[in-house]
Image (cartoon, rainbow, N blue to C red; front, top):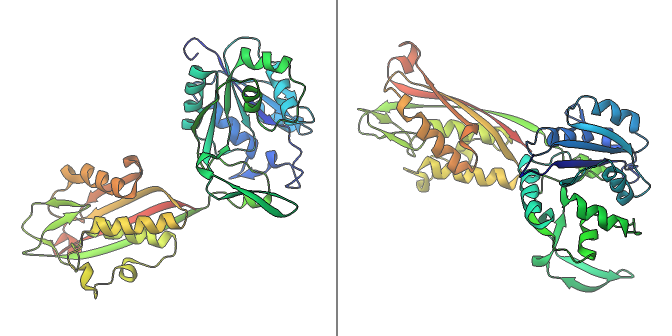
Length: 373
């Protein structure tokens, strides 16, 4: 219960897939049907109490999926239009509270979006997640532009759309228009204020075959770097200056940990290595701060539309002891890459005085990363 209110989710999975040519609800992403990914998101959200699934001709398959999840209380048959399907789902709600109506074809909805929209609807009776329109929108007629709309006031509507159950049911009693394309229109037409919450471009709806091509693909990268330990140089690892009798030799600040991470990230996207992007023949990179170079790599990652899932690095070093500096290294790297620190792992080990690291001649680092693209 949230603030003594019961929170329901109505997940609509009754679409016929006319534009995509097959039942997109049952299309598998990473081995899991699209609609099941949506169910998982609401099953795992702490604010959701009960889930109602609305199915079409796929009802037998949807019922089979429903059996796996404790919060699913029923599966009902949808109507010929989306609004009618939602109405059929609402009939199964017997108490007051809030209802989150979600398109089953939005399998990438985040827990944060679900929670934030519920919290806002609790205050306003109606809330929807949206993202700003990126492109210029034209209004036209007969293939001729009539006007351009100001995109700073335009938003793309997403789901879940969350509403007060009692108010929604009253509006449905007087509604004869089942052609509305989203639930918020009922509230708008009745004069209610609908709160806009922050959505995500990742929370897109699978409608056409092109949308399926947007599925996240995982790419693995590996980086390895080594630098010699010499006198009269600073020892910098992960942006942390460590007091020691020797430092690492290199054209830049020779931050071997950051270099290995950069190579892993570049490798995952097949963008070459740090020597290609920051050659040691260029004067501008002499003594360069490797965290700044890492920020440049981060820009390349963003330009590719990729996101970092996690990084795991191992520093191979006999001396000095690094345990007390590891957390700061992780925080520095995470800050530059604009990711959570729990996505950055840094470990340190020795080679029992074997090899060039064991003799104290140098420090080596292995780094691996996983990237979504």
